[in-house]
Image (cartoon, rainbow, N blue to C red; front, side):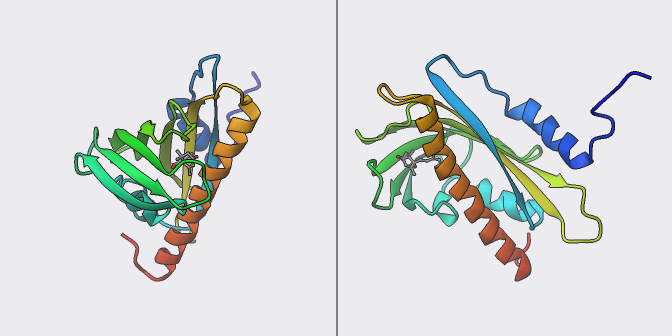
Length: 191
Ligand code: A8S
C-alpha cells in the first residue's frame, strides 16, 4: 500500500494545513520576507471572529494601538483606518486598508498603505483566518487563528531582524486576542 503520510495525521493538523495552503502561502519578492503564526483560543469561533472582523476597532485587542480613526468606509472592504500607536515605537501612525473580509470563510486581509516618516513596514500585508479546532470533544469549542504576512525588508535591515520585529508585534496581538476572548467566553458573553 502506498505510504500516505497525510492519512494518519490528526484532524487539527490537516485542517490547519489546509488553511495554510489556501490562504497563507505567499510568494515574497526577493526584497520581502514573511511568516505565519498560529494561536489556539479557548473561545467559540463566532466570538473570536466578531473581534477580528471589526476593522474600525483594532484597539479592542491590539495593545500597541492607542486609537483608531476611520478615513474611508465604515468597516467594509476598501475601508481605510488610521491607527495611532502608544509611545515607545519609532512610528506614531499607520494607515491601513481592508482588502478582504469573508464572513463565511472567516478570512480578513489588510494592507498598510501609509504612515508617518518613521514607519518602516512598507508593503506590509496581513491575512488572518479562523477555523474551529475539532479535536476537543465535549469541552468548550476552540478556535485556531492563523495570521501570516509579507513585508518589504527595509534597506539597511536584514530579513531576520524584520521578521523578528513583526513576529513579536503579531504574536502579542494574537495572545491578547486569546486572553480577551477567553475571558469573554468564560463570562458568557459569547456571540
Ligand atoms: C498589526 C501588525 C503590525 C503593526 C505594526 C506588525 C505597527 O502598528 C507597530 C509598530 C511599527 O513600527 C509599525 O496587525 C506599525 O497591527 C506596532 C506602525 C505598522
